[in-house]
Image (cartoon, rainbow, N blue to C red; front, side, top):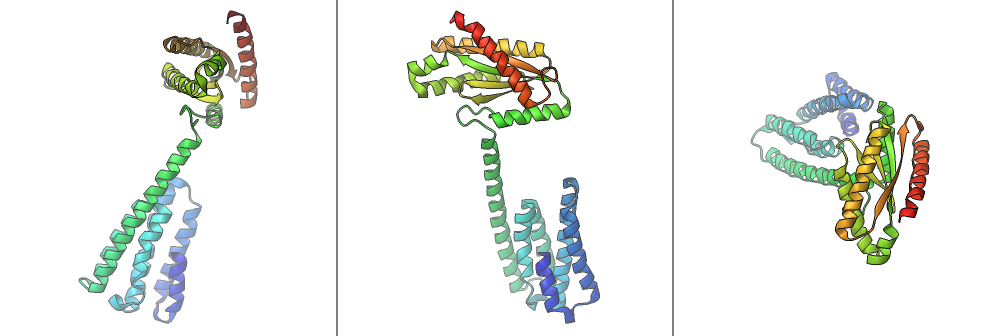
Length: 294
């Protein structure tokens, strides 16, 4: 928008006073500075940019004929550009301020009223478009973090959780858990039936955890759990998950169980790769110990 304002300024430069030239330079300066400000200050810069540019547009229109100015249509562009650039709130603010200024330019004039009507129609369409795009982006972001079958977090999200806890310095454990006897389930009731069992188990495991813990589908019939606290906390959670899986299996008439291995940060490793290696090795040991009982 600042670039458009600059071009129009050059076109009518003989009619514009130095104060208007300085105003246009201020608009451009605020826009440039705003791009480098921290996010918490950026909204204030955007609002200052909007108000300064509105003042420029108003001055430009007054100096070039008021209600009959060929630049009266510049007021139509601001809500569209602000909506797409900064969101619905800025589109509404821009349209409201523009409407007020347009009435000052020529209150009651058919041309002004027509432009205001078009501007608000354009504003509403812009807001609907922005909200639709934002909703789609939120849905895509949600799906990118989730396993499509169970709705649990996926492996990538689990690793992000590991990085987050490490960055905060919060003691935690990684549990890798694998279903015992699940191949027999697929062979007995088919893969679609096995998928339904996975969904039920995922829901039950999520409910068995504490609010601060998370479970993710690591792959196939394997799950990963992030438990804040000590190795003792992880052992208790693992035992609770085993009992949960055993109960669900009994309710469904299936002979399934759960083996688990866990690793503690930072005792067993400082990196996600090392923690997973340790947890996986302990999971393998647990499955070997459970094998004779099956």
